Image (cartoon, rainbow, N blue to C red):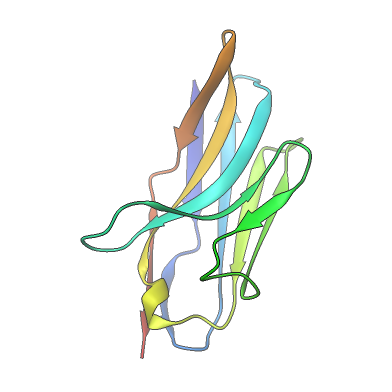
Length: 119
């Protein structure tokens, strides 16, 4: 079983920066895609940024140019550098590791970390 640990959320003023970190531990799995997602109050969980197994990154339009995702598949870690934060970035942020499971893939989610941006 994969255990996920997240850290780095908090309260910041608009225009500020935060860095989120996430690490997976447990049995050795092959990691496929990894990424960050967020869910605002009353909203649905949405993709923020992902990295494919081949290293391709993908960002939501709303964060492109402000957020940077990085990951180390060998160490099963990833981070999200968030700059120029806006009040609309306020949400619970979740990291996800997609890992091998039998003949397929399984998503393992972090517990979520609160990011609050004040205006």
